Length: 84
Image (cartoon, rainbow, N blue to C red; front, side, top):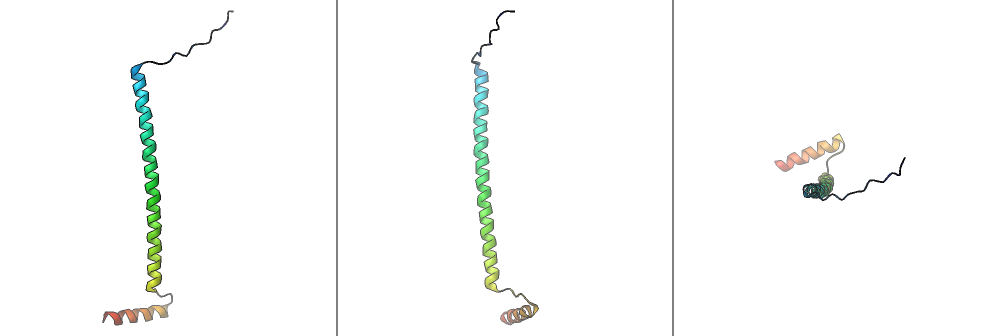
C-alpha cells in the first residue's frame, strides 16, 4: 500500500453559495435582535404589572377595606351616609 494523501480543503468560491450563507447569517442576526427586543419588552411589562399591583395594594390600604364583619358594617353605614 502506498502513502495516503490527505484531502485538500478547497475554499468554496461559488457566488450563489456565498450569497446564501450571507443571507442565513443576516437572518440569524435579525432573529437575535428580535429575541432581545422581545425579552426586554417582557421585562418591562413585568415591571409595569408589578407597579400596578403595588399601586392597587396601596389604594386598598388607603381606602381602608374592613377586615371584620363589624368593620364592614360600619364602613357600609358610613358609605351609605356619604351617598345620602
